[in-house]
Image (cartoon, rainbow, N blue to C red):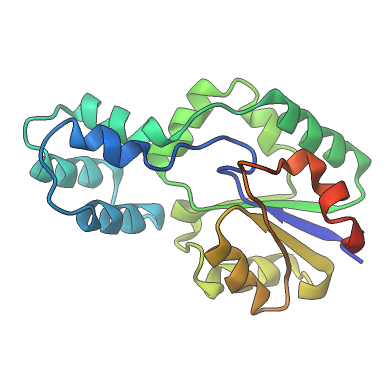
Length: 202
């Protein structure tokens, strides 16, 4: 019996264009390898570097770009947040049937953009009993330590917990701890169909 539902954020609630940041950065200058940007992202997502340090390091790669251009390119991954998904989580929270948590690999620039551009963000956040962003807790998926952290912090039993994420690497990691998972396909599936698609768990 599922008592706890842990939701990812990107491509579960807010739509993403994952190749967009690299695509937009390439417009700002030559880039021989995307590895350096990927490595910066991993550091930034766990709060190991600050926003100013990120921008400064990006300027070393794209010296002709302005801070504003780099920030805009960095946030290009973020698209719209369909209101029907907000309605879904709000209605689910109102039932008080489940312990709802959010667990997202999210950095400071992205969450600041979301706060400014999603008018119902604070109401969305209030739907969850716990709201974990990787840059705040210094842990990121798919490291199993982040799942141990959430389970321990909230005294959750893995077998009573469902984790939803669009990245298979992340759901695979959670599965190793005995957590039930749904690796949703954002092109074909919508979180609002949770209780139909995963009906066997409820």
